[in-house]
Length: 103
Image (tube, rainbow, N blue to C red):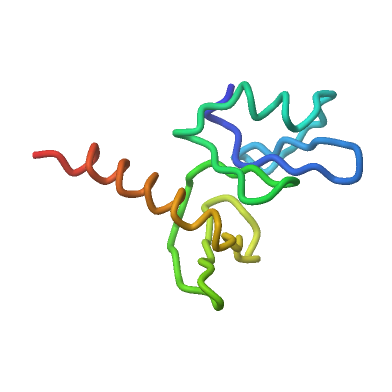
């Protein structure tokens, strides 16, 4: 199920879908095809070969206007958000918080 997807990575010509339980599977679709089937409220494309679900543990400033994320279920490497994607990520977080924190 889509809710079980942690992140998607294209490695050479193979697309790997990593599941929340730590397993992964290969899929025979192009990355653009996969992106067209994913809900942008749940998944965020950081760069061409990577798509992450929004399982953010914490965010911190990186350098040169970029952000770094630590994600639940992802390895210890930070996910770097480029300057051109920072505003999109902030808009998502603002939208998420406005819906979550309604009284």
